[in-house]
Length: 538
Length: 80
Image (cartoon, rainbow over all chains, first blue to last red; front, side):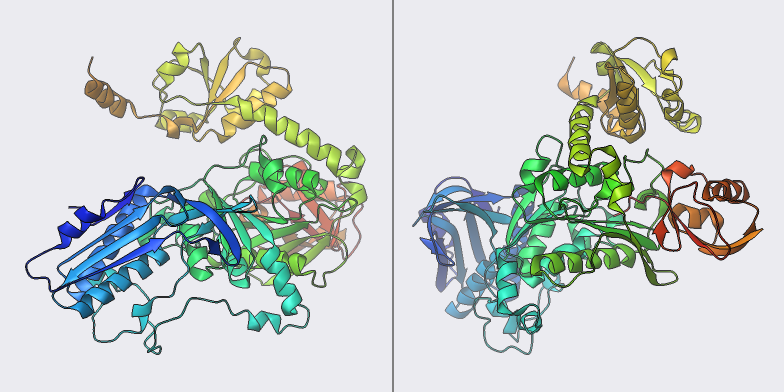
């Protein structure tokens, strides 16, 4: 039976309490968390809880099981509400029955503290002044962290224990004294950070140190964008994650990390990549954006949105043992990404971590440098005049600073804003090239002719299981005239080359060319489809 | 002949098997120099995909080489 549950409606307390009445129990202890009418000085009219249900369920079960094992109590239950709640409503209920009162109290306290720390639940507070904010639900210390005499259970061994602290930890209040002591920071600087809103795009190798340092520094609001699930291959460079988190959404894990590191930070998460249709609107909500993806398209999208909204942008990328960093101030007369690299490179030109490999600490160094640049901008710390590309070599350690001349960049094409506007319009147009299909038969049924744009060796290794013509992506632009009349669906391994080729062909006037989103990798294997068909019946 | 110091980044470093070298060359411009290096090291990237800097200043491909120049070739990188 489930000992932890999420409930979208009111909780039946009588039933829960009855479940815990056992002959061997000499004591029962319960805790109720209610919605309060204020938080950190702001009047709250109500709130909404949003949980990452699968993860919250598993983590909640684990916490209750840990409490039972740790304190030797026979039974415990916990229910957490989700959805819209009003002031006074029950938000969380915990009940523990034990042979004696002491372990029941302790187990109850343990569960609420761990729930607050570890459960992937966010609350959206509605303030009386009409404003709203998402706040990660972790605002307490753990009373049991100072306890002795109880061996942690196997499941709990991974947690840090503070054996030097005998007294329960009071409600956490951040201590920024080590940075406010800096003459250029001080209390005024700290107030600037608390008021700052920073968007971090990509919670990977670069994003991990950026998020950690900005959260630690007390940046008031952090937005996190990432559409990926944690993969085992991420762990050598993405240091905020743990092996047990593999398969979970990185954006939730990163939000939880920020909440645990500094509960004073409000976190906004987006599990869908930004696109040409919303990127400018999202950027306008932030004071600064840190671009931490491994995706060239995302970099150009971010650059254009930064220029058009006047939002400073910090770009970095890594390759094996080195990296590049560029700060786009987004001020008129200062260079942008396109001043240096006018157009997005063709796929394969810019190396990636997947194809070329990367030493784990390399994105760590570049991400840490991005965090420094972000804090310098937010705090208005001294910076050298003029914009530059920084080349960071970690094999023969050194940083080379190459100044970027504005007059040689976008200025020759109407200025950064005009170039960014064209770039965003193109991205909007290109966004329409992707179409999704589970299998190629469906694409043919929808009227597409298939063009396999992979290299011959890739085709030989994994031929398409549907009629298609072949033309490697590199030849498409020059051989466009040989293509059959459309609509055409270009197919490659991952959808990147095919999308790039489709955009190029559209640029040449072929409006009926599309790209299979996710490529061959996104197709359901024919065996899986056959099984699915059998399951669905004839 | 002009003697120049070359620095390679990213894919170029990988393909050259070194972060840099000293070279005596008959090339007179950066473009000629890069063409020579392409055939020598088998660089896969075309010059228009790269940035090039001479003595720590971004430069055009038709910039004339001088004795003692330090030339840096920089491909775009995407890892993160």
